Length: 115
Image (cartoon, rainbow, N blue to C red):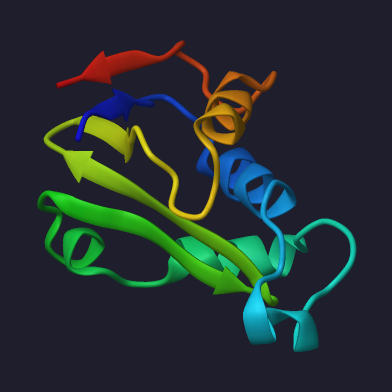
């Protein structure tokens, strides 16, 4: 699996865009919320501690699974001084990933694929 380098990306905008481009699945319909993700929810997601955020090392720094019923299933990885995302988005099409990563204001440096 390859990854895309998204270093320099505003993670708040990325999390909001992932949420906006995800749909409820299965029992998620019971928890589904219409509209955009709130600023408080984004703050909570970005404030969640992971091994990488706690240690300052490599690993996932943002990990979204189900958020308010939506199957987001998206992870941002830190590797050294770079931020990376996988070239596949679970339960989403390749076109949805490309649309997400090419949307205005989401990824700031253009996409660079890392093998």
